[in-house]
Length: 250
Ligand SMILES: NC(=O)c1ccc[n+]([C@@H]2O[C@H](COP(=O)([O-])OP(=O)(O)OC[C@H]3O[C@@H](n4cnc5c(N)ncnc54)[C@H](O)[C@@H]3O)[C@@H](O)[C@H]2O)c1
Image 1 (tube, protein in one colour):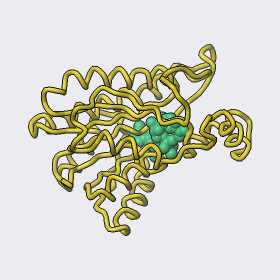
Image 2 (cartoon, rainbow, N blue to C red):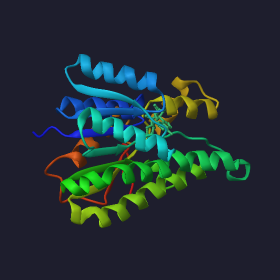
Image 3 (tube, rainbow, N blue to C red):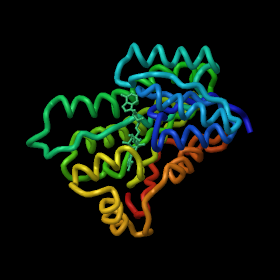
Image 4 (cartoon, protein in one colour):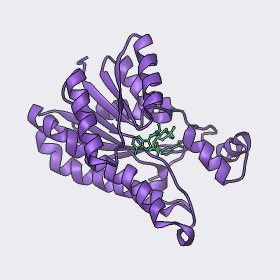
């Protein structure tokens, strides 16, 4: 299998950390990119201890200068990015009528603008090489979910970006796809449980009961789908969204 240079945003914890670890297990050199550099360093160190190659890079994906600097740091360490996973994200949930503009902007800034900025910074080298893989982390919330229109709109936007970029980048050997997780226990679940006024155990039980396959997701479930899209022989699949949620969405 060919070793590629992979960049995973928001890889300092949760789903992104799992994706970074599994890309490294396949022999890819992985940039663990996060605005939380301590988290990124921990994940990169774990990958190194397991025999993989990883570098931790600090970056706020909503900031163009920070994105350019991070992509350059990765190029210097490993070479041009060949696999990009846009995973960084967070939620700032509220009823639409109570949602401050700052919370709308903040969520769009990281989820949607961040994915666009990362694509802009990495796709030129993929085009020049005639090969690239971009996988965007969406969410089942892209379809609909209450009291989080900033997040719903951003994730629906990520899916639109996925289809649009897939069409425009296809002639250059670059595929663009998305994975839409259902509930996965991470830092985001802590926030969701607190907002629902439940303990983590109560929250996970309520959510678990609503999932037909009968369990909560893991970062590994999501990484499996990302690795499929990132594979060398997945070049006939582009502009697609796979929901990985234990539920038949779509
Ligand atoms: N956990 C779930 O149930 C769930 C469900 C659907 C989709 N998702 C999506 O999965 C992705 C990962 O979330 P998670 O659940 O692992 O949460 P998490 O909080 O564990 O990880 C998110 C990471 O993104 C980083 N981050 C946030 N904003 C950033 C920015 N501007 N620049 C760089 N890094 C930034 C955080 O520091 C954190 O390390 C997100 O896009 C989220 O929307 C999660």
